[in-house]
Image (cartoon, rainbow over all chains, first blue to last red; front, side):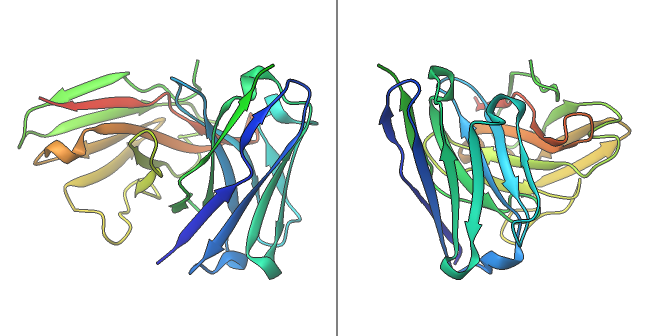
Length: 115
Length: 110
């Protein structure tokens, strides 16, 4: 059974940084596109970034370009999201997902940006 | 304002058939496959439909997807109480060079 487990969320001050991780088990991690998707309080799902199988292609939503970096380590079956210069509007539950159509999802990790 | 437009709410009684629409444009739905997701807040979203009308294994055949031009639809037949959730459409958008989600539809089973 596929399992994606996110970690690294928490409370951070505006302007601060966080690094989210997503560990995969039971899934051919290196064969799939991987994604970060977020849901702000009371809002819908929003795609944040995705990365191809070998990490050579990366795409970001405009609101995080230049601040967030997606990466992966196929040897460790892990996906990462480095988040810098965090803003209040980045407050959300962050989900990792994998597969060509975001087939598999984790339970999410909450990020709160507040002073 | 989402690039993909969904009705904010939908409802039905047990056993009924409900349809949720997703309207886009030539740069997204008109050019790329649509996926549908079921989400209960606080839980992991679940893929229901991919490639416009394909069901992953384990998804009941009560769920079906279709697409015509720049619009897509999710149909749920034989509505059950456990179908009460938020539903999202999603696809790639050429103009934005990224994935886009609809605003979500909250389905209530009366």
